[in-house]
Image (tube, rainbow, N blue to C red):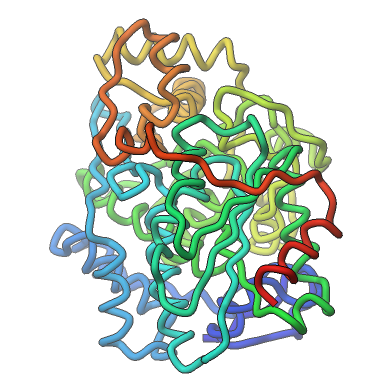
Length: 434
């Protein structure tokens, strides 16, 4: 499998280099040279496959023989060992629950696949690998769980102080072992900028083997395409095209859906649902991409002002605005509207949504009025108990916390507090990992 940089198509590498180095030296993102289509027969017969089996078929289609078939099957089956059920609200609107993994968030799929893939690539190396991760909430917990105790790999997670939920923070800061947390006194965009700068710092990279587990890494993105096939398998009745409503921040999840569409899954539209950080909906409306500092919201995992995967989206469409807005719709909503949506879903369907899913629900209601007759699936990206205070206050309802999350409550947080200062961050890495 060969991949190129979105900043320079002539710069190509193999899958191992793309996964282990995360970013090209020109600060682009890696994209597959070829995304082959799956056979129409495979799509037609998806119901014959288990979730893990269809995931292997999708992975094998895009990765090919670069990873031996038996090893790739082992990686996929080890990562995809929990369900992604679709709950039907109506005949035309479903919810894809992506929170049944270890950290109760959709990012478990990508993190577990990546951890096993990196572990495979790292088997022959005696040099320690340091994974750098910026998180706006859920990525850190999923990566921490996915990589915990992986031999030869340590994980350093950067998160914005005061801008993740208490239980999300405990997921990042209580595991210990090969997992370290740095609490940055800034925003997610500041965390992401520090990570990106570290990858472009040649002096640092000469001393430390660095990689990333953010969705900038192609090994995170590929497995996120799996559950689009699983959802389509469950919700379509006669092979019709579906639309997917995707609560979006860094846009890795939506980009993975575009990969699935490119591979032949019948998708009518991808719908970007954002909070007040509405950079992509603004672009879809105006044709102008204008990143700006993120603002805090109750759907904090989507508080991103400069979404990394936008460059991948543009690469898929050749930066042609009319083509992009033809396939992707965009809507944004305030916290006040998000709370009203959470109440409406509970009242109408007796279903509890987290704030991110509620943003998706708002977009789904508008989208379905504009695209009458289109069946749609909302991606519910995290368990509502991860945002316990907000959900319980909004709904005036006690939310049951799964045991694996509840047990974190009394654990001691361990994190390095740091200003937004690249020199301080670089020095920390050199002191602790060089």
